[in-house]
Length: 268
Image (tube, rainbow, N blue to C red; front, side):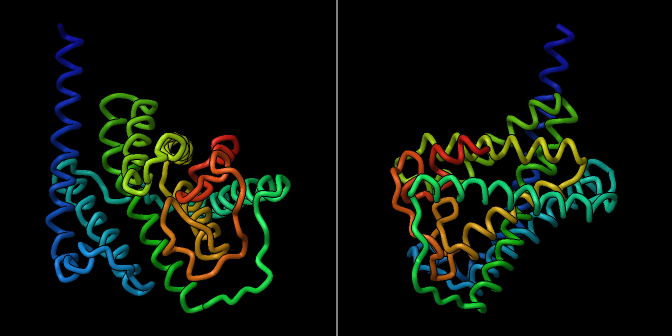
C-alpha cells in the first residue's frame, strides 16, 4: 500500500505541476498571438521576420512560465532549469560537432545511394538566412524548454531519468504530429528516437546547452543552409535548395523531409 501511495503522490505532483506550467504558458503566450490569429487560422505562409516573432514569443513566454514555476512553486534557482554556466562553451561546441556530424553522415549516405542531386544553379538570400536562423534559435529553445526542462525535471525528480527521457520523447514526437501528413509511423519513431538522444544528452551533461546545440545545428544545416524540409516545414528552407531529393520515400521521408525516412532511423 505504501508503494502505491508513493506512486500516486508522485503522479499527482507531476500532473498538477505540469498542468499549472502549461496554463501559465498559455496565459502569457496568448496576447502575443491574438493580433495574428486570423492570419494563422487562414493558413497563410508567414515571412521570415514573422516567423522570428512567433518563435521568439513562444520561447520567451515559456521561459517566463518556467521561471515562475521554479521560483514560486519549487523554490529553486532559475539556472536549475538547465542553464548552469559550467561547461557552457564545451557543451555548445560538442553539440555543434555532433549535430553537424549526424547530418553530414545522413547526407553522405543519401549521396552514395544516388537519392540526392546537387542543384546546378543556386541563389541564396542571406537576409532570409539570417532571419530564419534567428527564428530557429528561439524555436529550438522553445522545444527544449518544453520537453527537457521543467516538465522533464519534475518527472525525473519523482520517478527516474529513464522515465523522464521516455516521457519527454513521447511529448517531443507529439509536438510535430500536425506535420506527419498521413505517413506518421516513421516520422513519429524518428522524432521519438531523437527525443531519447536529446534527453540522454541532457542527463549526461546536466544542462540544456548540449541538446540545444545538437538540435539547433541539425535544423539550421538541414533547413536554412541546405534548403531541405525540416519536420514537414518547407518555410524553413529560405526559398532555395542545395540538393534535390528524389529517392524512395521509405528512406528519404517524402513530404516530411529526411527526418521522416528510414535513413535517419538508421543514423540516429
